[in-house]
Length: 292
Image 1 (tube, rainbow, N blue to C red):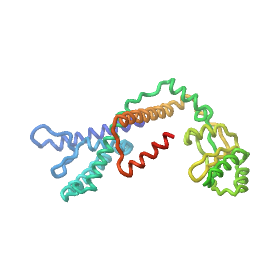
Image 2: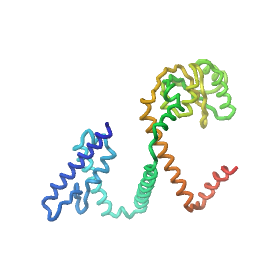
Image 3: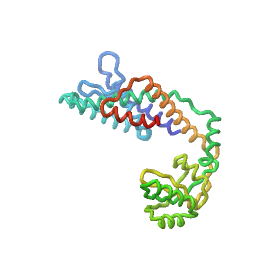
Image 4: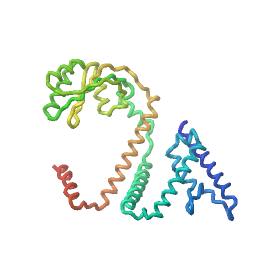
């Protein structure tokens, strides 16, 4: 498997770095520090720092393990030299730099907490995958590849949106739709493209799967209404076995998002949050609208 090969490559790089660090430290008194990859003046760059960067460049590490490790280490050395020079000039005391460092620290801590919440999500069972497969025929058993003509219609008023939806519902073909939009004096742009259901929002998949050739569905958005007309639909079903990995990945991702949302909700409910000044007025407006 690809991920396994990448993991093995990163492990090979780590062993190479550890070996190099051990050899490099052999002339020192006492036990060698196998965690050091390089020394830059009085500071050190560790093997773990190199590994951390390599884990975010897994493909490069898998294809060119030795070159990737050296490239990463050289980059870290360059970065460390610049950081040392910045501290020497007192840049680490400048307000903008202090704020940026604190923002980065807060972001890393927040991501670590949310990652821990996500890790608590359990994987889906075979029954879970079966239920998802059966409840979304447009994605799997009745999957189709669509040739679609899209009309982006300018609609600045609610009456125009309703007019476009009525035209889309009545039209029997893309040419019919285009003629009706022109007669109604509506401005639009159009394009033709092919699309698979997995590349559509789930709500659109359900709407498109119910359409025959020539039929359309309209979806409003700020300032415009998109009309999608099915020019052609070619059957391309996926059986349960073929869809297994994709469904499992999707359900795991959904459970992780849910776990993070529930965890953050609990943290927010337990916290005391007070908005001040103009922010207090802005925060009160959505709350008032929600209570109506």
